[in-house]
Image 1 (cartoon, one colour):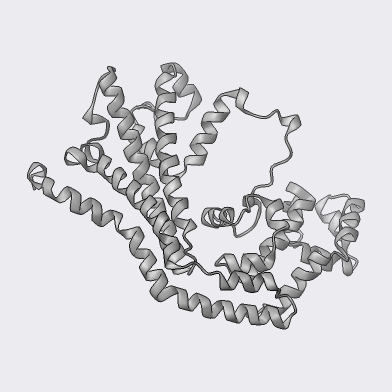
Image 2: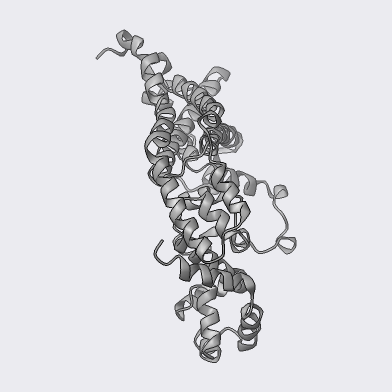
Length: 355
């Protein structure tokens, strides 16, 4: 096929690719949402029987998003998708198919084209991540309007981070590039710009963190910074889970430990028992920080399990097997022994065991 004679396919192709995200809303509203509402009724009935439902919970259920709430986020993400695909496919898809072979040189025009390549490939990475993300949320019956804002913002952030990274690498002395980033023996980071830009679209925060760490003045001094407790400390937590929980305002272990179980059940697609397990793990991580790995080796995964161990009088054995001071174990146990939040989690675990 001669690409030059097939330019008429450009606009229909772009519109077809960009239409995927809007079509997912139709599938969600017409087919998936009724199933979600039935599941909500079952869960809320269990909570009501256990005395854990309140007026605020009922308000959440009654304020389900209407079709009109999707209009603005869909327009936002569709317009940016069209712009991104136009960059990739213009001039017979030179950027997508040619990469850096499209331009060689160090003049201003070559620099601009390289910047355009970075933006286009980063958009492609962000779009492919967004397709997986939206499809996953469609399957789990969890597709509010905010999900489309999230993927649209990710496309924008990924594109501009890739552009910034291109400018960053271009400004580094050639010898400093290899000292700063691991590269393949026969290439430089600039030669791999399309690949790096694509990965930036997939993981924009990692590249942004790398750039900020290079400039030491942007980092907080270690002695003035509290210990970071990322959600990665929770067993069973994936990148998709972290992104979804961040939309509910949960970015770290502390947020998860003190979250409202009922709100998470209503506002996220995860099973109640899974949420209880995560929140109980978060309580344990919050108390023991990175020593929680020692407790896991001793068979203690959650604060509920730790409380049961304390009730059975096995803290001394745990101290011997983990090397954690018994006095500290005992103090944590007495803090949570009659803690209402832990009792509530245990009650929820019992009443939601079949949901």
